[in-house]
Length: 339
Ligand SMILES: [Zn+2]
Ligand SMILES: [Zn+2]
Image (tube, rainbow, N blue to C red; front, side, top):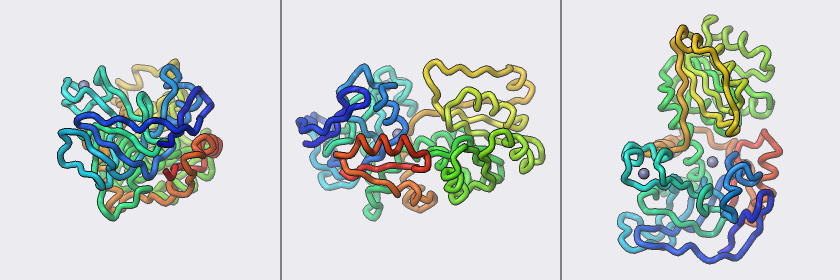
């Protein structure tokens, strides 16, 4: 089969590689669409995965079941599917709690092991998720990134009528905005330096957009009775923005940590701000358990405007160009590969 193989940081090769061998319980999926995300940029640049190259990245995919291994039930050849990408041991404390990312054996498809920048990808059957017959493959391939933000929305427990500040209006920031809107949060404030992202944020449900970070505090207070936001979502990953989140959240409010930042990034904050303001900060990573199923439901019933995410496509042979173009233009919310 044809695959885009990252042979070393910064270098993809389009290669003919052996088909993935399916064992008992495995499902072979013929890939239809696969998204490019920020994680792929990090992998491409050698920030992660450099230690286990060559690798076929690609983890936001949809496709059709091409073959099933022994013992596979309820997944049939021809079924249109997506897949949870987090492969845990399946039986430890964390796997049982749907916190698979904390499983000591966790491997992510397209990040730790071969993924979907290829004609076929192999997935354990327990992670396969059927999609509705009438859902296009491009929409279905958004369930993974949307699922990650669904998890963050659940963890931060945003409620009807609460004010939400989303710092960073990129792909995931835009999903945070749309989920907050779907939940009934108000007002929703989006902050980003890029005017195109803010235009899309406004189109997708932000009430107030802020591009000049020096005016962010006053912009937030102007629409929150001077208090600060009930929920602040950091979706960039910069220590300075995490530090500001403690000033932008109202007393008693919550901070959602979503932006990853580098391994050596360190945030400084005064414990007093947490204690006296009774605020808290809560992280979330990846889509686990029901998150992708919930994302699929939201996509199916059109609670999310997917149009800004489906503007840019490339072919499998253009993966390197796709990643370069996506990284270069912050106005592109999503780049998908047509396989
Ligand atoms: Zn991703
Ligand atoms: Zn486990």
